[in-house]
Image 1 (tube, rainbow, N blue to C red):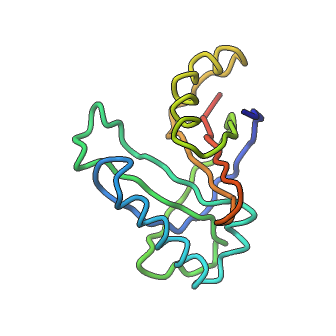
Image 2: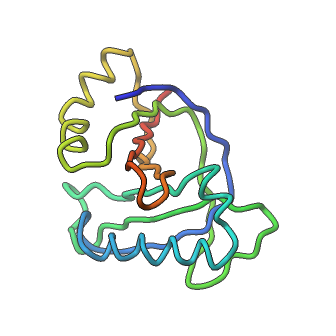
Length: 152
């Protein structure tokens, strides 16, 4: 696992949203549709430069599973007109600890199981903001994902 710190800017975004339990088949289907939408709308350069972000907006321990919101987002220029079915919004940037891992079920599980220890090891203090998943790899290549943990 690689770790670095990044400061992300506040940016205009285009996003798709699914409402329902996290990790369900609809979220995987939404990723396929979102990647297609990104290509169709000429945003492939943005995808490779900034990545696609996945953000779980709710805590499933508090929010009923059928109401949990999961967003896929991509940065767009301020003057770019977001086309349906995407929505538009703002991603609030900030300082993030970036953990890069192999995108497998086992590696993701190990990441979550060891997150508190890793945060303590590097003296990172959590900031109140959603944790972000970032995907930059093209289909067919070795898959990595990054977890962006908001820190102070």
